[in-house]
Image (cartoon, rainbow, N blue to C red):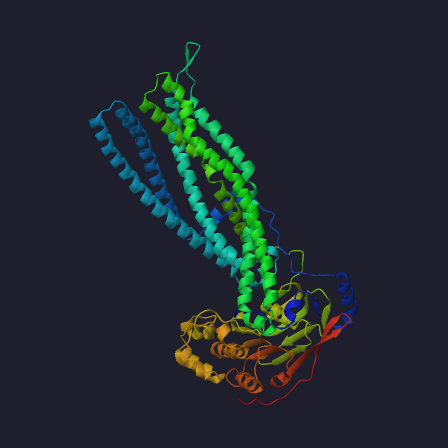
Length: 631
């Protein structure tokens, strides 16, 4: 089935969510009234995300990654980073041992030994520098591959048939998908890779140095009342206590950052959407002189962003008291706790520096949570937003199980038929005068009615985008159907890409494309086929509708569904494009929805949507026998 593009029509867009359309027979009017009275207000079911723990959300994403084609690349990069971290661990241990020998050489004033230690230092640093460069490259590549995977995965989910349209109706979780797919995925993958590697490195260094520090603690002897006292693992317990105090204070002070970061991302997305909307509607705003009102609305968005940023600034400032104070104290704490061993004479200056170095490595590993808490809060907020968006798409088909759905099936004889169909709205019902309406191949049917009667929602139901209701719609082969909304979708790129959409730009020959342009009266654009342009901005709505008919001529579907597709065309242009269905597409079926005078001349069968106390009634108009309309 051809994709339904931008089903944007007149005021029915606003009312499409709020009426109930029922196809039934007059004999069922009493039942219809009873059902109508039982239904007060209907809205497409909103999707709620109750939220899960960070571990559960991470596991869900990891499972998706493991099932993707990026599994091997990510595994290879992760293994390489792990090898670099292990090599770095051995280098850090050797550097810590060198630290003791270096200061012992200084204490002994041994220049030969000092020069030898400097040469060793250059070798150790060269080894560590090579590992750091390799680790940095692999970490950046890991971020790139994770970003590529997650972005493509969400795009696959979002652009499944009709899902992007329905997700926009699913409540807050479907709002601003652009930020969730672009900005949130970038932050999540960058932070996930960076934090994971940092945590892994801290864990490896902790495991390697905690044993060394425990062993070195045996050299710390306290003299108490003339007695020599040694506390097993003394320096380890001091490092653990110091880290525990810092982590506890960090969590208590910094936990509000998680919610504030999430709120800020939502406010930023709202501001970005408002700015894009103002930019896209700049002409209409200027014609109405609405810049002042638009500024007022944008000021409200800016105020909400600034207000959230102010709260976030206060929270970060409070946390800085803990993190910075913790860092400054870390300079002196190891010296203070190890100094009794030095003053008692059981530690040399070099031995003291080795103990201090090991303490700093252990303490640095343990303080990872303290140092990275702002990033962790940011990561948790983006993880929640991406997980909520992914869950919304996963649950979209299950979110409205309590609401009846229109059944879509293939017609055994390739026709279009409605079998007791009802379409849910909120303000009434539309009643068809027949239990079953059937449209055969080659028919030309026009559905007319006043604005708000439900014509465009019927159009969406036929396309499978509006499933809420009852009954069965029997469709012909979806591959032979094309839907044409009032404003055709024009993808970014060239005119050729717009004409061949949704197929690739090279799907049709240049000659065929030029013939289609000439046929609809756009021959002057033949020289601009491959010039990139914002066609939705540079072309009038009438020209855009002509491109839609040129696209129709190229694809040649057997079933054509039009929703106000000629509303912006003059009479001559309308006759020209409608004649395509009498000549090039003579055997195709046309089902049109519209209210423009003169459309009946191009159809043989008319159905009228007429409002009644129960809603609107779909009534048959006269059957017309007409000759083909000349081009």
